[in-house]
Image (cartoon, rainbow, N blue to C red):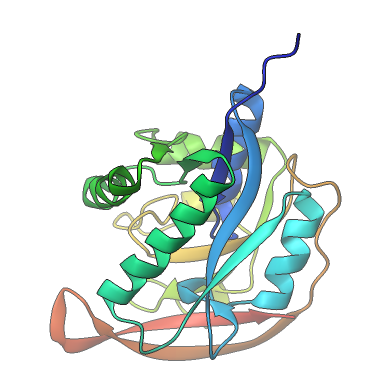
Length: 233
């Protein structure tokens, strides 16, 4: 008699850390990964700081072969409203027999504690397949496995316009400024993963325009921070 694996939904960002964490879970074989869960801007139809189009996100999920569920967030959504939306989504997952979830977080302690505290309220167990891995070793392993990922957003404090729209490579990682984490774990850059061992086929796209945008700095309310974005079509 075949033992049924517990179901798990994955909190999907479309980038390298999500892709590698998903790969690790598949390799471990302990869970049936039933859903990729992603938040998308209701007005922009794009993923948050990645700036990825919803249409490309859907093609990515199709290439991976795991059903995608999208939660739409309005630009006016408060932190409290976000928590309510996520709680509702978690309860929907539980009603379909899913009691486990996973994230691609690596070393941000506060974020991990926040996720676990919110999930504990609804009785869902969190998995962190990449937790506390050395980020340079991790990204080199990711690339050696054949993953391909495009840089779609980057903090203008560290990078110029030419950095976005390029592929992440070992050479590029070795040339990063010392204060930038090799995986961009502090939000220095974001990526779109389009090929690798979790994909049934590569995701086709074109590199579009590059723009610079400003955002309120969460750590310095009176200052703005600037990011370069590369549109993928």
